[in-house]
Length: 276
Image (tube, rainbow, N blue to C red):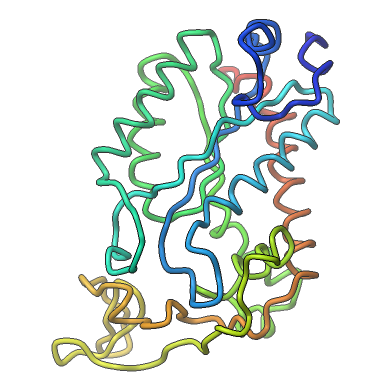
């Protein structure tokens, strides 16, 4: 493995000069792509959860560098795939077809220059469908096997280990953890705990019981339905109470996510996921 790319302290591709790009972005380099959304994360938290995805991605790249893997981070995709958060005041989302086209173009640009070792750091559920379509297409088209870490899906399970199942249940949910504790760890100066609201509960829509964001409940079952986020959770919080979120939890959680991401890069992504 080349050591040339390990001679720079720059992690962000955007900060490389064109000459540095030619020197360091070799076929052995791993490219980390962070992405998230601009939507309601609770009245106390910044709408851009892509901020957290980028912070985690940079720490993953830094840790992978420490393991001897030349790793670089693209600018984050800040706008998520449109779902049920269109009711967010000030939110910005892309149609699924637009997000697919954007990801396709990014993959095309990277692979044109031999950059085929890609890890996606995803911070938004509305991106999953587009990621599945694009990564499957590029596997068939060019043999690229690009995994995506959906940070919050992974984090819900990690929180059970970090806090214990009962404490994790109190704080886990939209507008609570993992994102609030992650934010308190990485950028506490832009959170507003004084604006914090308790999670929404109950309510009805069209005569049915609200079962959560994008869901109703019937006979004890959770049914997917076209329920907008604002209808289910006027303050952006459902399930978990951000009052229990802590910077200490965010620190431990971030460390676990970084260890998973860096290890995945070292053991698989850097090797290009060779055929069995």
